[in-house]
Image (tube, rainbow, N blue to C red):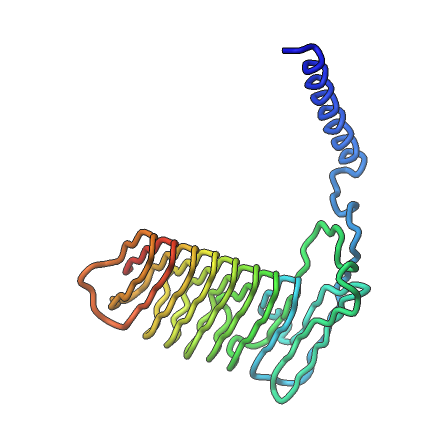
Amino acid sequence: MRRSKKIAILTSCALIIVGFVLALSALIVMKFDLSRLNTLDYHTATYPIQESFSAIQVDVTDCDVQLLPSQDDTCRVECPESRTSHYAVEVKQGVLTVSQNDTGAWYHHVGIYMGPVELTIYLPQDQYERLSVDSLSGTVSVPDHFSFDNLQVYTTSGSVYLAAQVTEEACVDTVSGELELTGTRPQALRLQSTSGNVTLTDCDAQAIHIETISGNVSAALTSSKTFSVQTVSGDVRTPQGTTGDLCEISTVSGNITCTIQ
């Protein structure tokens, strides 16, 4: 090895070590509080809701959405607001609507924020007619405390975690996010994903339709089904000789695994 090449390698290693030491020193000075690196400033704005409603509609871009039971039998919405991002929260014709309004240019949203950006809806009741969530990049979480007649969730890159009961139809659509459903048993279940995996645990429906491109499908169902499965290059494992309600699953390259509990 040439002497110049050895010097270059040693210099590179020395610079890496110096950079590591400087980064570690900076973290020690900050007491490992990464929030000090934040260049975006968020604060929580709380909106109390006095009117009654039977449906919920949420339209946001870049925050997580979670529903939680209220501990004091009142409804409130906690929103992560900033200098350029605000929320409109109101009840219109029996529907609680939450929509995000961005007033700044796109470059105002470029920065660092080391912390959760969450929109939380505290609900006093456990049963509602409809839930509709439209999110760009945030995760959507709906726990098993709640029940809805109909549910519709759409995300682009955010994952969806659904454990609530749905009595009629549940539709969940994502491009690259993960879909995880636990204990949900509507009459009709429609799930669609491009590259995100779909996982069903202890779920069931009279009509099931699941469609992905490259995402894997893993479904643990509670009753026998007549399986209609289509895939181009994915592996398929489904129970043989079972009958019952129709379960349609199609993928291009994703694997399909189904079991009956």
